[in-house]
Image 1: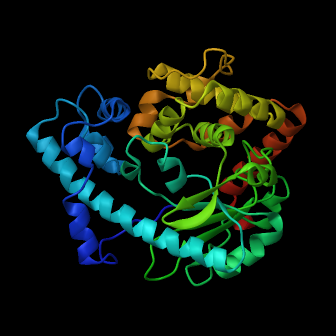
Image 2 (image 1 turned 45 degrees about the vertical axis):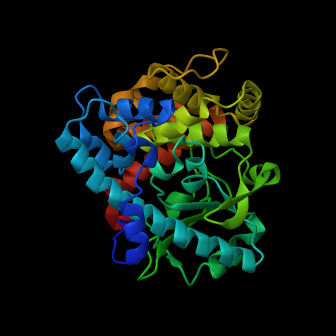
Image 3 (image 1 turned 90 degrees about the horizontal axis):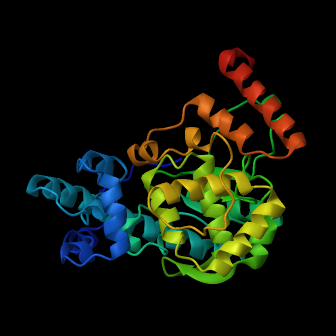
Length: 352
């Protein structure tokens, strides 16, 4: 759930500051090697800047070598917009996190602005929504504290579907008028694939951190590998920024990867983890060589070119992922029942 941001809500001084300071390392000709590699993959051999603009990664694409003057001009224009959007998202995220701290609610920021810190150039990653993890006992207090900023989204499906699916992990909040930042407040990171990853354990292992100059919790290094890669795989990595997130994490220590693997085994999410690692390896990254091979059929879901183009999954692919990435037979039966229920609902909306 993302909302299109506009420049109307950002003050002109901030806008002008970012107008002349977009992707500074790319602008002065010395981007980090990781940034150049990611930018080269993003635009592809044909220097397709449309892909970068659609993905809100124009600032990253500016680091790609061999771009024409026209392509660079278009990317610079889009990158200024992205920088202003990010400045606005950071400002609103800081307000949200400070309000939660004032209410005594401890939150973990686990995607978006948090994982951007792993990029060689953090400001080049679009912020997206603000994804928060809280303790189950604090979910209601968090929603109350966030009431000035966002309001719960309406239910998208009838209650009978929820009886054959894992319970919802939290609440989606849409921004109130005059604000742009959507907020997901959850007690565990995932509903279907990855639902067995324990949110309370993630919170217990989390570290003190700061996002947008506001205190919060962030994932420990092993959990960051685990959650970010499982999240990307469960969506087929169909957003280029999720691939770049994974590329950034391949440089984590071998100890962190081994701990992430142990936690993946315990949570029975080795299949999506290995699928995403295989995708990263196919793009030239070097996740640990000791990781097992990905599950059969993984390339049907985690396809590098589809990820680069940002092609969304079809309904069939989404349902296939729930089945392919589930090793537990009991859970697999439940997933199958949930898929069937959603298919029935899609063909019979009058049962709502």
